[in-house]
Image 1: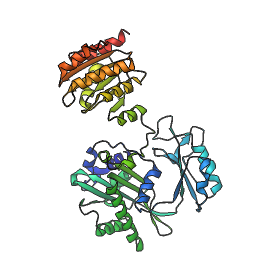
Image 2: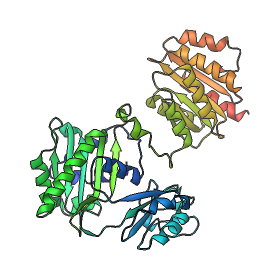
Image 3: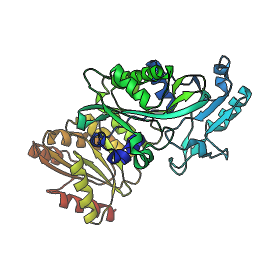
Length: 423
């Protein structure tokens, strides 16, 4: 997402904006570490630096056949600014370069198991579990290449600049003529002529034009193969030994393609995500943490916002909300309650469900089952409306459980706030 956000800052500077509308797509949740992205590039034949992955000195053997002139040792976390960061053990820098292979393992040991703190991490940093050791290449020139989905063109767009290795939004603002934007026909893909044209715009010369064009074609092949919404290479570098290398890659994927890309989504890293969000996603639920003490179970983002607003208006504060969506089953309701109450700040639960696609009776049965299974101890206030609501209310009434019903949302919010005040 950081790469998409970066691109969004400069799209309005383009003479003919072509990626502006792509930022209206649904949220993309899949995050991959640098080495994982590089593996995907390598599998598609894209030229990258040779590298190894280590988790500590126990993996020292992987370096036995890795003889290079210079090693780059990079901590693997989902954050930028690693080179300028520092660790919780006082060690400086998440990126180091050395010519001595004997120094690699000591560097890895100072990183793995410690939290790296940068400008883009939480205050306490992110725990480093893996370190990438790569061949350090001598870069002669850095260029920029990105392929993104663009709704305005109903397909992919290639964005290129000979000024790589820097913030692309700065290039767009200061020298917009140094950015080239090319729509790609989704049915025929990128043509050889287009690839050559881009390579020349990137200022590759001689035999490197064909090499760069080959890399561009392979990157587009990867883009379609993995259902990407963006591949950003910064830099796409020219080396002193006549190679064209993708040095740093950021990939974003279409979450609607998860059923086709199971292996890729299985690699997802959740290091900076609330574990309750991760657990909820496993059951097709959406969880968002807040800072109050009333847990909210709802169906639909709009209803969630309304529920939290009315809780606030009645002097309360939501601790979280969990959206069960439109096709919820009873077992999902139980999981929803378990996730909501795993937040120790929750002192009451407010259920606000409008049954359209959702059958209120299904919600009611789920509530009764969850309350009994969990031996729920916090006050529970339920407001149901819509499909099969009378049957649902009867289920709650006949359960014999201590469940407060409400006729409308305002009454439900008042009861939830009052229940905490009387505890």
